[in-house]
Image (tube, rainbow, N blue to C red; front, side, top):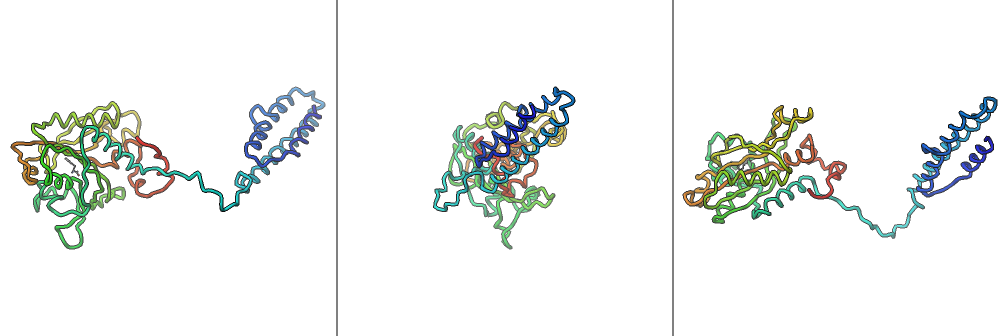
Length: 338
Ligand code: PHE
């Protein structure tokens, strides 16, 4: 028995390799769960009492030799980079490391896909806006108290020029140039001067939608929202809660049923099980008039959502700031599409 241990010891001492796989195989064959050491230690129990001491000592020598050997080989491997050290600078750089889209883009693209499938076009507009397109045309005349709903960044001293607070401004521009039927969504960056908490973020992203045609009703809005939430979140329950926006009448807030199974569910839904995901409503006739569309002939609905909020729900992200820190360890987790 002792002879066998001695043979193993010789084998261990003379073993050498620079190949990671061979080293790993060696490690498993000796120190794996069913490896040589484990078998020998099991056999140790059967050894007659008078031989136990000598056998035990030899066994310990072997055990130490194995762990020394593995340590030595692994540190050697590290210093050579795991391969026979490549130092040829003319070597081709392929394969290149591919990157991936930002999670906000992944979610934005998915939302765009869902709406383009039912005939919506994509429209874009400027981030620096004038008062008319961001406020006045949207039924928010000067001094309207609801302007405070969206704290605004003004450009220098000109109160007429500002950073858009929502992409509804794009829809105004679109209506000014196009007559119904209109089906368009406007994704883009928006800005709000929010100092409420350290978690508030002054820049975020929205997608707003607009549908104007003859005889568009609230039930069309509801069906469109159901189609959207089911496409994005799978089979899901939504509810519409009465709300107020100056540009829509009636207006509603859309909640999605999140459930109340975990403590986190309780926290993020404030104990209700429901989560608000967007605002919506029937476009106010005044807005249509302001944009050159006859409200007696046409009607429509509009909706708007924050992409960060949706992305946080989908990926269970608890802090909005992660989207803007550009930490590659965070960003790398979002390979692929939704
Ligand atoms: N513009 C609103 C916002 O930014 C969202 C919205 C759009 C609400 C369209 C109703 C209709 O909060």
